[in-house]
Length: 360
Image (cartoon, rainbow, N blue to C red; front, top):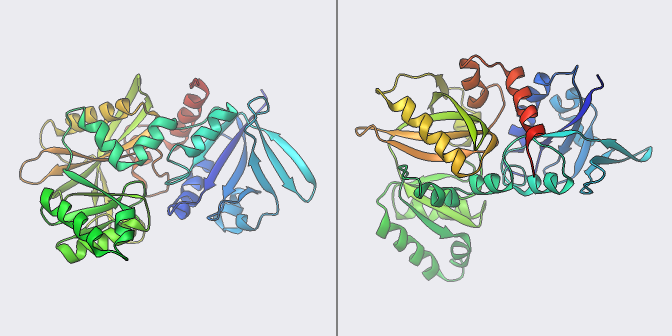
């Protein structure tokens, strides 16, 4: 049986570029080389699409110096990648795509739209689920209709924060609106930024203003929400909106005051606990809520759904959904499935097979 060509796309223009370059190494090693010929396509931070010769080029970072551009053709009759290098223009047929991209322009529905225009099967959530899941504000709007608890929040437009440089009344108005609805401390998050980039915690008005300015550098919409004190619990989902299964749960023990980018990837004191002890019934409640949220967003392939278990009340509170969760060695998604008896090779193959089954 001839091998199928799988394009593994990594890197990207988001703040999670470096994490993608770690995740892709795990995915690539897990792909069955007897069934698939891997074509590595890296997207630089500037947005240049390049052909990476090998996994070694990704591991040492030399792929960014590739002399061969790799452009995915949007022509649905071609299903190919166009290569422009020293040998001129050549093409490679693509049977399936595994995007190992996190954050903007990779997890937000934009590149998924390109895959659908090209009518090439691809791993992961579709355009709607990716876009809604990436945007924390719109995820909250959807989850509001499910009756699942989540933190109270206020939406702030970044343009009002930026205009405050010229007219302070814009900032005063936004701050007063937040203070009317929420008590300190509050979390400030860019609505569409991933891996906690641009996230801060404010204990007073001065910190709120600084947090809004920071978040405005990352997104056009800013989510300000009530601080939830409790345990951080995550659950993995696999399948389709009509046939989804959930893993057990894992717990994040953040080394910092909250699980920001540095605490997640740079602080070795941050830990993950698989199958933590939770109060009776809470694991099933979290699994049920994760499946409901995945289904409501019309999820497909994979997602990781994050919750808080509130201190004192033990109430399960939805935090966010990640429609293309990390696959690095420290990532919760593959660890949760491993605990369920599914190793990384089987998990990756399941995702590829789901890609072939998807319909447009």
